[in-house]
Length: 210
Image 1 (cartoon, rainbow, N blue to C red):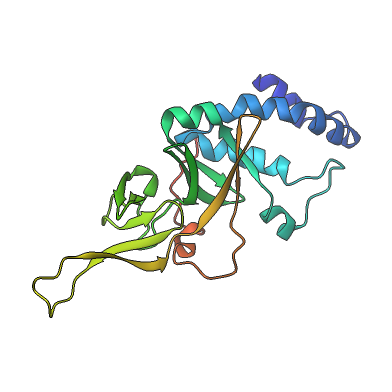
Image 2 (cartoon, rainbow, N blue to C red):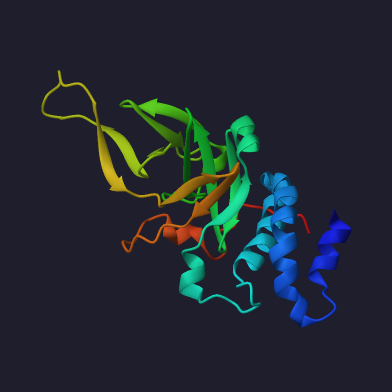
């Protein structure tokens, strides 16, 4: 399989690139994506993202158009077994969760201090499933990226703590399923999100196999 992949990357002439890409790449990617989990993810998704960033005529897509395109990150059967996976989507590290029959994707590092959310536990708070950051126990809703906390009225000693939201702190991305493949589309919401700070630059979580 790897020999076939190398041959695909070394066409006899540039004119054969579109044809090889169109015919061979879907089959190759379906074979490669199972390597995507954990430490293999950076290498595999870097290769797949490169090819997805090209048009069939061999030309590169416009950067803005590429950022909004979906990327295949793995197989549905695999994530249902592991219940989570990591991926690099257009140079942005994300974690994808499968929880109670639903898929959720968000920036991999916690907005608060860059903690690795893919190593956290999922718990319910105020009836909402949240990922709990393993570093400082910040609670982030899977569905919306809101940060939850408990508050109490200090002037009322008999008051019970109630759950409140700090607002959306973790950027949420879109997950779709097509023919058994899992695709992630990065959020294009224009607002500034706290997790953006740790999503790029030197704060890398996923280790390359090279």
